[in-house]
Image 1 (cartoon, rainbow, N blue to C red):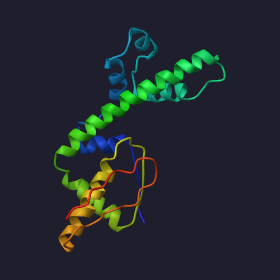
Image 2 (tube, rainbow, N blue to C red):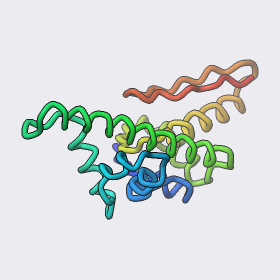
Image 3 (tube, helix red, strand yellow):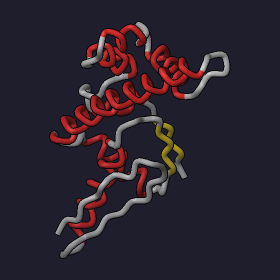
Length: 164
């Protein structure tokens, strides 16, 4: 059995439309924010800067007072909503096009070998590729409606259509 560990570079390999962490940080500063909110968003020079900042504001910090921690929580909610929208928009653009041939091949190998896949990606491009490949493969073998439900773990179970 194969265990594959995938990071953000994987989504970028699927399409250059998928943002890397540094680009997501820059989107936060371009989003419609009040001057007060923008002042609280640090300059994001690297992807690690964004991850460190989000990690710090996601949870109350013992060295900050209650008001400062509450502001951090608000900033975290605003930042994650912006990041979510950027990722959803990017993913929609990518999935309108054809899937790269190598991705279909990889999806088949992962499925046929019953591999475990650990991904740190925020998008569902791999899950969508698996669903598309499984649906296409089954529709070539059978007639009638084909329910396809690959096994996914975690909070992001993609919606999978049924083809006939």
